[in-house]
Image (cartoon, helix red, strand yellow):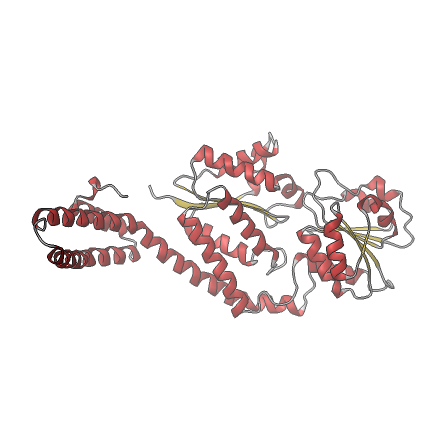
Amino acid sequence: MQVKFRALSLSHKNAPVQIREIISLDEKAVHGILLKIKDFFSLNDALILSTCNRTEVYYSHDQDISTEIIKLIGLEKGLTDIVNYLEYFEIFNDDRAAIRHLFRVSMGLEAQVVGDIQISNQVKRAYQASADLNMTGPFLHRLMHTVFFTNKRIVQETAFRDGAASLSYAAIELIESLTSNTFEPRILLIGVGEIGEDVAKNMVHLPTAKVKITNRTQGKADTIAAEMGFEVVPFENCLEAMEEADVIVCSIQRSEPFITKELVKKFQINSYKLLVDLSVPRSIETSVEDVPGVVLYNVDNIRSKASETLEKRLASVPKVEEIIEESIKEFFDWKKEMIASPTINKLKQSLEQIRQEEMARFAKNADKKEYAVIDKITKSMMQKILKVPVVQLRAACQRDQAEEMIQIISDLFDLEKVKTE
C-alpha cells in the first residue's frame, strides 16, 4: 500500500480560543510528541505546527492514525479526556487535500488576518524541529522547500504580503480606534516574544502614544526599547506600570492567567482601561470585564479594519491561489517520478551487473586501451537499452499508470532479486 501524506488540524476556524489554549503545544511538547510519533509509528516524515491560532500535525503513513496522534497529544498534555476534543479536529486523508492545506496555511490564506507574515517563520521553525529529529525524509524535505519557494514567488509576484496586516497590526488598529479621543495614550506591552516584538515594531503607527515595555528577560526588552525609543519597566515593577497604563497588551506564555479580575479590581480606573490579550493560553482572565471601565479583547475578537492594505491582500488571493496550484502540480509531477525511481535504479543495477559479468568474461585478455574502448561501447549500449523503458515508465507515472508499468518491467528484467545499494 502506498504511503499517503495526511494532516490533522485544530484551528480558529473550527475551535474557539478556550479549546485552542488547552491543545496548544509549546516547544518542549512538540519535541516530545514528535519522538513518540517516531517511536510508536516508525514515521520518517512528520511536522507539528502550533501557534495561537492552530495546532496541526502533518505526517506520511499508509494508514489514518490521526486519532492515535491526537491521543498522544492528550498524553503529552496530561489530558485524560482528549477524545472529547476530537470533533474540533479537521482530518485530511487525501494527499492533495493535505498538501494544499499546508500550502494555504504556510502562505497565510488560512490566517485570522489574511496574509499574516508570522506564519511563514512559524512553519520554518516547525520544519527545523522535525529536521533536528531526523523526521524529514526526501518527501517532506522536497515538499517544505517547495512551500518556501512558493512563498518567495508570492512575495515577489503579488501584493499579498505588502504592508502590515498581521494579527499584531490588527491589535494596533484596534488600539488606535479605541484611544482616538485620548491625548498621548499610555501603553504597556507585557512580553516581547515573537508576537510582542511584532506589536512593538508596529507601535510606529501610534506616534503620539507613550509606550513602555516589560519582559521577564530584560535584555530582550532593552534591545527593542533602544531600537524603538521606548521606556523599559523592570518586570518586578510590572504591577505599578499596569495601574498607570490606559492600554495593556499582554503577550506572554503562562499556564495560569497573569492578569486576574482580583488584580484589576485594585486599580484606580478614572475613565477606561483597555486590555488586549494576544496569548494562547490566555494570560488575562475573561472576568476582568466585570470591573467597571475595563474593556478586554483577545485573539478571537480582534479584527482588522477594512484597510487599504487588507483590501490589496484580498484582491491578490486569486493570484496567490494560482501560484499555489502551480507549485502543487510541480510537486506532484516530482512525486509521481519518485514512485518510479526505485525501479529505474534496480534496472540500471541489473544491466550494469550483466555488463560487468560480460566484461569480466570477454575483456580479461584485452590490453588497457582495448578495455577502455570495450567499456565505453558497452556503457553506451546499456544507456540506449535503458532509454526506452525509463521513458515509458516516466510517461506511465504522468498517466497515473506507474504500478502496472513497474510490474511489467520488474517481471521482464526479473528485478525482484536485484538488491538496491
